[in-house]
Image (tube, rainbow, N blue to C red; front, side, top):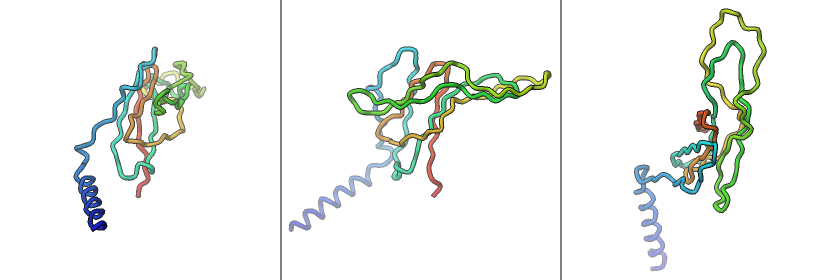
Length: 153
């Protein structure tokens, strides 16, 4: 009798788990993340998956600029912070000056400038967690996006 009760409870739990599909997924709230003066709050949501521990998130920040033949990399860094009182993580771009490091090649005089997306250097990958939004604070002139990295098989 006792074993059949546990078996019934287990079957009921498994049935409930499989009945909840992707359509039942609600996005986590970002209300607890305040606005920061002088910065734009970017909020991204990632879909729940079975292997979240295998995935990583890359934060890409940059802007379109007119460039000659030289390469350019924007100054600044993405710093991870804890939301006080919540323990949640958010990211903030710090040290951004609007310019950065450039190569100093002698470009041909008649070569026209080309519009290119110039990124802020960032080599870090961050934890994938569908239970919380990915929140990034950045200067208004920067475009921010994320890229999901996962193993192929």
